[in-house]
Image (cartoon, helix red, strand yellow):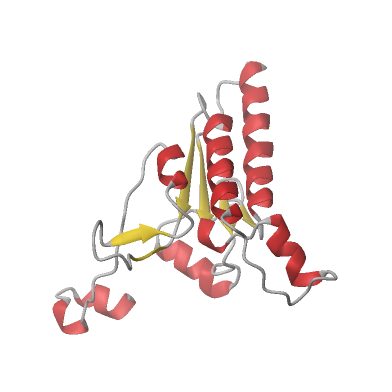
Length: 176
């Protein structure tokens, strides 16, 4: 289940990218959906997880494992941020006083419990930024660390500058 928050894969170029990445886009194997808010992401995962659990309790044994990919947590808005994009407060820029980080952590915590004991994996992309503090680790996550502690596992990937002349494989040069 691909939950596209950034709308980076909602067109033909996105489909081609997924195919090149080896994703089977057959309708019985792949579900694409988009979301804008943390609440929408949680709702999508909750509906599928609760249904999966009900089917398991009903005795169905041939259910396939499920993988959710959230692209990305960082692009998801809180409900109040979403309200500021349209209604009477449209255009106002107001600080969230840490609410976004709190709500993100709460959603990841809920999702962890929703999927517990089921063959369901949730992969979420969270952006990192350079730490402005001269001490401590080089990178930190946007939105605080609560996300890191509720997730079952975390991998930190950073960009490394790769120049075309550093790549030996012609296929990689041509494709990417």
